[in-house]
Image 1 (cartoon, rainbow, N blue to C red):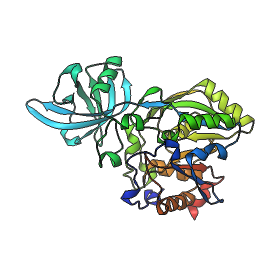
Image 2: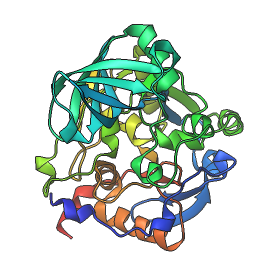
Image 3: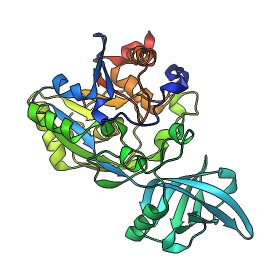
Image 4: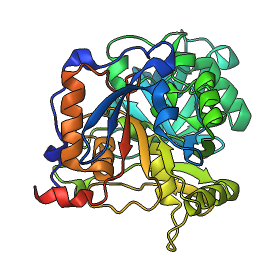
Length: 365
């Protein structure tokens, strides 16, 4: 499909730089194909679901994966930045580095604050490989939990580029850019639909008899990359690692068998569920990397509903929601959201999408 089908104009002032307070006071646009749009707030969610429905959350935890440092090549030095996006060994991460032209295999990079040394504020690495578009494989001098500790000492919260270009990260972001139920460290971007939930909202969902289950997908920095190809067939997704436990898979299959709806909280949860879908139409235990790329015409096998934020134009995430609810439906929904001053992107408002029965029929409209 042509990528420009997923383009739209978004006024700069619609980009949220801070989340709503409290989190569940954010607005939520309910989108049901053929039934119009409904303006609600996130705390209305229990009234929109029924006892026996199941919310599926991604419990990944964001780490300080944004690193600033100095590249040394002989006597030559240059300021560089790295955003880690997938761990491939106890001491190795795939990362995006900029400026990419200043990086070559074999370079030594010293990350940290103000030139301090070792554990007091510096972390050293070697560029093992250099790929396309500034992607590299970094081999760190530290490994395992020692590397994790160093990242927490010198790293920054990796705010999305559309926020980072407007302000620096600060202490608030350590809590704002993290779901309150996060527990599995490894993400370099937050599963942002989950940012809207609070303990009070969980309690209200419990009182309604709405279940919750957790999966883990470590969101990578590739989620922020623009689609540079003109056709979706030419775009390559970056892999992210995740898992669905046998217990969670069994619970979701049981919910479906009794007529309950499966509601994915976030595109990351949905992509992981689809990766774990079985040929028989159920959900199985699953673990590993996934680079699943969902565009209109895709046949969903797992979730009935999707709660998600408002996404970038021409992004793989807007393509996914268009596949889920229909391209024309989502174009109309986004036009309404822009006109009605909804807040966009990671710290923005939410949408609750119903799965269209035949969304690919819109491709010929």
